[in-house]
Image 1 (spheres, rainbow, N blue to C red):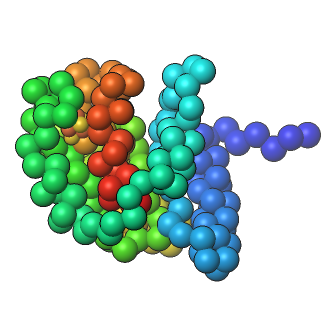
Image 2: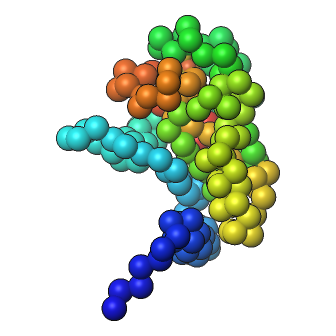
Length: 173
Ligand code: SF4
């Protein structure tokens, strides 16, 4: 009989442990960094965010920017309408040289207020997941595709993703 876990958190932790083993395998094979999409709900018929990342990564400029350079470039960003409704830009945080990058979809209410990624309930779960991987938040890098909160935590619109995703690509070309 198939082993079905009753607790989704346990199942998630098991998946993360498998993922950790895979990432370590990739690192040992010289493939870095690993992108981990925490939540991705691509529109039907659209390319997945991960696929877009791969395509744009291959075609992006190879100029190496520091995170400070990218933050400066971002400035008081108004590249999409979310710039008018956010409280704070949620840039990202962690180890700038991290081998593992967690990329969420967009900041929520807690993140918007604090200007930090994954600090609400989902963030607490992510912190536990990272700990289960034998790591600390400061060992990895945590950010989102969007750097501003969509009102009411609605799903990001395609135009918002199109405006903000290049900043993510700048961070990890
Ligand atoms: S979501 Fe991204 S592109 Fe839109 S205003 Fe915020 S930082 Fe700029």
